[in-house]
Length: 371
Image (cartoon, rainbow, N blue to C red; front, side):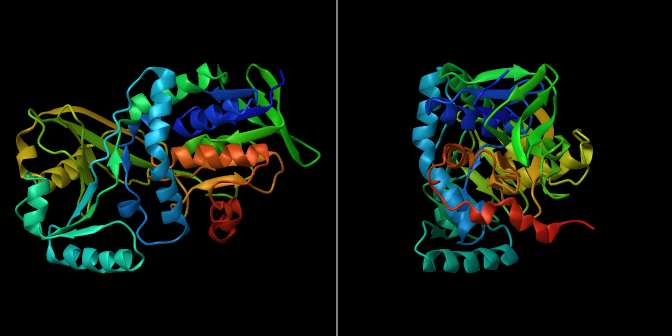
């Protein structure tokens, strides 16, 4: 079989890259070992918050902001193509201080963010409770990022896959055996269905990226970090916005569900929901909004973030010509999907990327190589 581009992995990253390449007229084959979007993409909280996730201005913050700016159009596009709603809600995010130490940390961050002219509001406790009355009376002020928001990753993952399919991307189920290189260049993939030859290969396999033979990345470039989430049901809805504390977050959905997250566990590929993990995320949630203690737990899950050593994504070309990366997004895979899709499509097509990819090159990871 021959195609123009092979994308390994059909999570939100792989499907979104495939969408953009197919729209550009390329023949795209996406390889997925199981169900598109069923792993980390569907297990995420769906938070769109550069202000909380990127702690200070710099290339990573700029990347996150560039992706956030793309989200309304990106969400509308995949909804139109797929006929599905992704639940985008741009109501802002709150980072609440529940003790004096965290209040001082937030004050210092606010000063730095404001000095760079970036969007943030510093709220006192009264202003916090005007926005979110259910937030704990222990709140000692907050940072409010007014142009941020959230969405529901499960329908997003499915919608991105359907959208890519409808513009011509071909999805193939089965196990990838390795990336094929000839003359020092990636020329395709060995798959259980046979060899697939291509002009370019995009590795978007998330936490499993280093399990793909011929990946071309240094040891430890991507590792699984387990996160556990519990879902509570509030009727009527108790909260409207994503609220972070110093230890976790709550993500309300429009229907009253509240996602409580999340753990950061170095346990390899051990997928489990544990008593300790649930205690942590529920304690965080109740600390943020005490009335959640009375809400029923309706669902729990765990999955693996594809974590890079510095927490920033691995994007674009590496040392093997023809092999490009869309992996290592750590906690920000959902947030970074639109800009990753645009940047990787540009790189494959030989066009200038919409953002500078140099800070996110795998070359930076040499300093993190394990001995």
